[in-house]
Image (cartoon, rainbow, N blue to C red; front, side, top):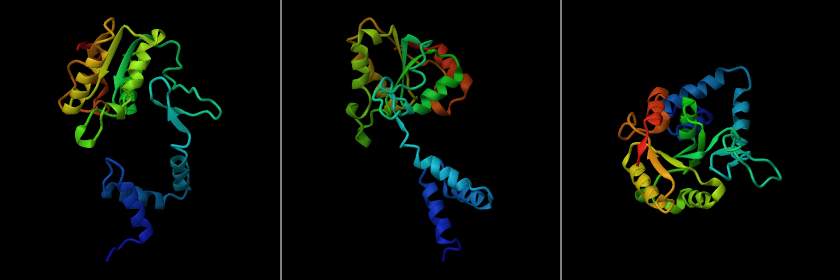
Length: 208
């Protein structure tokens, strides 16, 4: 027999569905909410309910951004920043990787977020990623950079994605393609690396 009331157990089970949160961590979080005298659970619930409602993808790089009612062309803060170097585009797997690179303060260019990597086992092909929009972006003479940085993780799927992208980018012969250098361990995800390691990898990037 479960010693926990059903409402508590349901809340624990719901939090446990999130990546990186086990049942023990979820249990501690739920009991912390129960002990909190302020309506913290209402604040969290409201924020989560509005999370996807108020978010969209940047029309340019596919990073998350706030949507504006009545406007169809929405850009994220990075793309909207006119001080960024438009001659360099850094390709990342996920928005969390973009955030990790921004924390290094070493990169001042633009981004393109793929929202994943090629994974035949999980039925993720080029059409599931933001690859077509990348080539369309590069076909635009106003968007053509001098360099594209492949800032992908150090696993097999990321390597396969990098190889696929390199072949796709060959038709843009004037664009140099580079990849992050030392410091990216095999199997490592960018958003788990410390800032120093990621900064060094960005500065020491090599031609791919």
